[in-house]
Image 1 (cartoon, rainbow, N blue to C red):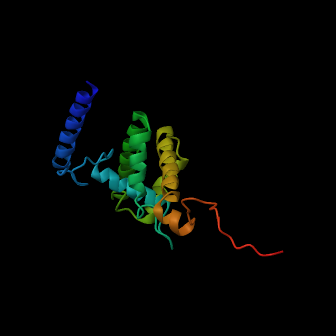
Image 2: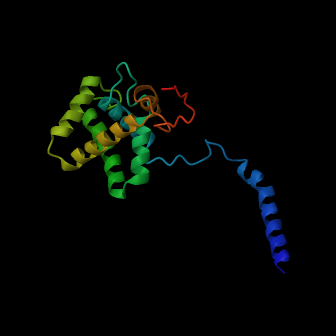
Image 3: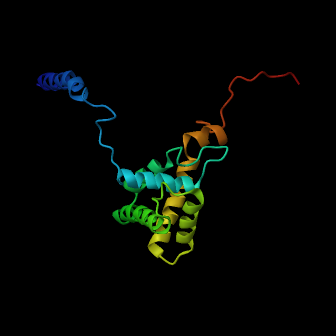
Amino acid sequence: MERRVALKSMAVAMGAMAGLPAWASGWSKGTLPKGRLLSADQSKNLAAIVEAIIPKTDTPGAGELGVGDFVQKMVKDCYDSKAQASLASGVSNVDEQSIQRFGKSFVDAGKDQKLQILQDIDKGSDASQKAFLGMVKNLTIQGYMTSEYVMTNITHYEMIPGRYHGCVPVKKG
């Protein structure tokens, strides 16, 4: 009796294994959903914001390391809907301020103009914009410090620190 159940289970498993490659062959990185929170223009503005927070010096800037995508992914996957709405409205508000003050989008604004807008938000009285900028600053620092470039070139990350040397030559004392 149990042999029949086991044979049926094995037959079902073999059928599933035979059909799995055909089912998964249409997948590629491009066909999977992006899972983005922001539109393409908002994503560019967010990349410009994180680049203004950590600009390129002798090391790559946050925008170059893709920290904008990190911020977007973290807010989408780990924050509540209120924070997600705050990110989208905050990015749009920064772009609107840039257009009103300088006649350019935030992406096209100069380095000093970008810093001026972000500093004015930081010093301003609008609590929602300050919360947005604080969240983006914190996630930018987190994303930059945990990026592959920083972990391998600056902090010299070791996968397993404090290794054990089991075979060490012993000197007679």
